[in-house]
Image 1 (cartoon, rainbow, N blue to C red):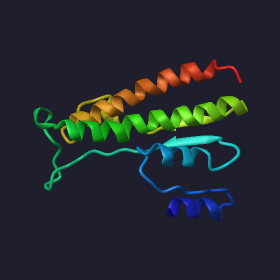
Image 2 (cartoon, rainbow, N blue to C red; image 1 turned 120 degrees about the vertical axis):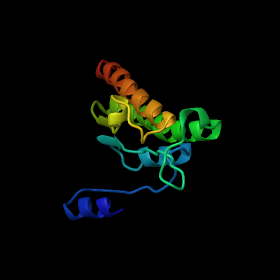
Image 3 (tube, rainbow, N blue to C red; image 1 turned 90 degrees about the vertical axis):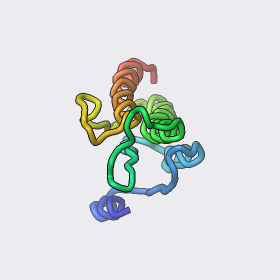
Amino acid sequence: MQVARDLEARGHDVVPVAGDVRDEAVAERLISTHDRLDVLVDNAGISPKDEFGQRTPALKTTREEWDRVLDVNLTAPWWLSILAGRRMVAQGSGVILFVSSVTARAYFMTSGLPYTTSKTALVGMTRALAGELAISPA
């Protein structure tokens, strides 16, 4: 919330929305906060670690961990971008920024399989949305 206060101090209109980005109601509230939506910055991301700060080895990754990481790191950004994209196309402008990771380009022992997969997929999703939304009719 400090970022919101800093932006407000600079004269920007900011409405912080707290909640779990996996919750569709939270996503819809976030996107519909203002009459106009100019920028969506998606910086959600989790990378589970054990009590020693180590990632789960690929062959020990559970379905629960896989689903949780992909829900936060990929599915939530997808849904937010769809909601934001619809508004931006209707108003004729807007910018969607996804924050991925260097793990999308190289192997790091500190990043688990679900995290690396989600951030790599986010790069592909960015390309696909950029291409499609750039040619969408207003």
